[in-house]
Image (tube, rainbow, N blue to C red):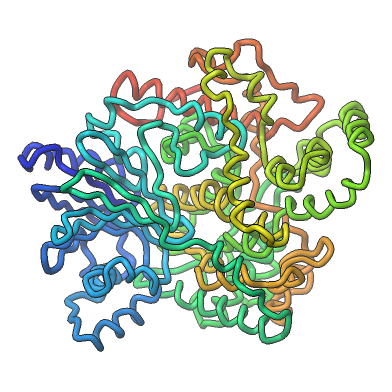
Length: 630
């Protein structure tokens, strides 16, 4: 696990550009505290910060091979031993025990097709002088990030946006993208390939970008897409399919236990993390467990985590929730680089911070909900089938009456919040409703919030289009599979995996997600409907696999989610940030009639980000704002 960065040289005088790598690498130091490497050629500069996990002595980067082919790589190839064995049968020799060398030698042997055999999470850049090109790549599901900039000087790339900002030609045309602001207000995150800046893009998950050094052109192609698995024939719903799922999950966990440093696991007490923990125990791992407890009862799941640990005979470390101060929140936003308001960033950061004192690698349960329809939104989709039988005017009347009667409880994803959100979207078509369940500010609210001139720059744009394209990718498939694919190509890479990567790497911790092994993802995509949902019951196949390995009470629990009592720190953030030219001065949230937890946290994060951005425009340094009152 590491941080990578680099750029093509505007001219061949390498001595002019070598110094630019150092500030780029310094900005990524948290991603790799164990060392750094630099390579500057007449064509390209490559930089690498290392968090040493496999072959701590021999896996340094950039790594070069025959023909001066050079690789910088962020992530892990979990099946590197198997790939190495295959290469050795072909006469390939190795000088280290690292997965990095396996990656490089596999590329030299098979070219870009080497990716197809890799089980892992990765973002990489290869300089291949033989082909006069630079290749940027990202793993299938987008677990590891890669940002890039293109201009007349060529391209620049980094694991995080802050890694690009030391380059003067990147800073020269840096401007906030109004469409990215629109995404953020609607969803709390920014949809790929956009970033908060119009000139900086994210390489989409499962994609390769090839930049020609001779022609100065770049082409992007997708090398993997889950849609092919969704469109494949469905598997039979029988005991053999359950066994196949169980075998793959077990193997996925076992592969992710490969490490030369201590390994642990996050255990929330929910089904997903409990299943991963049970599989770790089955593999004979020395499991170190970590859980976050909360003072607010509706948020606290620690009793369930302790129950699972006792059942499995394992010890668990419980981390007490603390409310972040202004400076701590500013530091979190600094790590994120762009507005991002998933409330679970706070407990995830605190949990990673505590776990890093004991372990360097952690396994978690992320991804199971996207595979097996585990979110409350999937239940809402089912319930909507019943409400569709009622006329729209009746649903609108119920919504209006509920607004007058129901007062917000401000508990964890409370029934009142879910009820109001459901009723507000119940009259929409099914696809739009699935999108709407997760919105923070709806389209009308966003337009009412934006200053009139700024609003014009977003007219005609709707973040829902990304979801609609995903639905359209699976014509003729059942609605559940279409919605899962939509989640897998929007919410998962742009929210869940951003949170996992930034908050873990902020603490120099590697977070691995067994459920996102592509083999398991492809199998889950081919599962028939009853393997995922039966009525309102979810994750049927996973419960079958874990029936003899986890307490019955854990199997029967409804999903609670890993949320934070954000209203405790955002209750005063009822207006958008002032002085930006983006928002109306008279817009204000009303916290008495509806639960505004997510809205106020959205505005708090946005104000914090704009404070950092304003400082950056003034000083040229991307830094947290000390004492920022957002």
